Length: 276
Image (cartoon, rainbow, N blue to C red; front, side, top):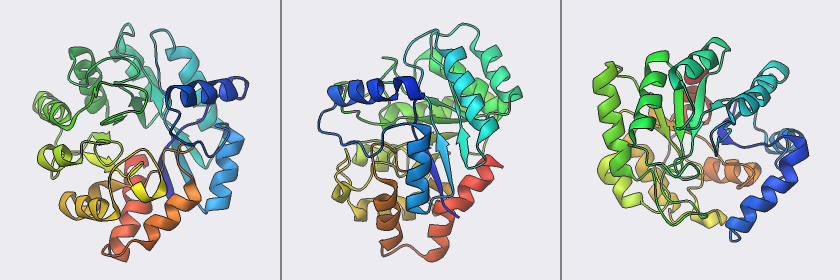
């Protein structure tokens, strides 16, 4: 069993335009599928990936209904795809909206501080993350740099502050947030300083510089994080379509210095617990 915990798709009618727009803002980043549902399913079949978690991004206020209608349809029609919901920090009545997503069976939400021009420790995000922790909705956030932006809105020091504040406010002791991209693209030293050993999951999307993805971390860096943070809090993830699922999975499986048991935790067992 293999679960990819970080993928993206777009509705058929806007997928090509969306991919073109994103690539224009980050021309050095490659794309490996057309960004559609069918393209992801074909990639999964080719790669030997059994399930993929889709992470929609609300880039502006007012997208909540449209984004989550599409996500809900995916969940109702595909057994091998699990879409999270999306919310913008400026959305009205965030607690009510998150309760609706919980009622509809969503397992979590995705936020992207860069695309909303909002720091992760902003009171609006604190409010959203606190509500999610209480509702047992997992939060996945982009972390570290993004090729389309000059400001890092989710650096490790701020992510750590959010983890501490929300844990204290809610009394939730189990991990309730996933920091994507090995805890933060281009801020690896800060990840080691502020996030290793804390109450969060880390996904390994965009973490292998040898694959040409947007990152500066080596295989040795990834292994070091897995060993230090604990394999039970690491999730296999690719960020498809921005990385090739087949190449990414093969590369991860080839890593030396990680036991088969650790690889099983990362490839599917941790995700199975989170997704119930």
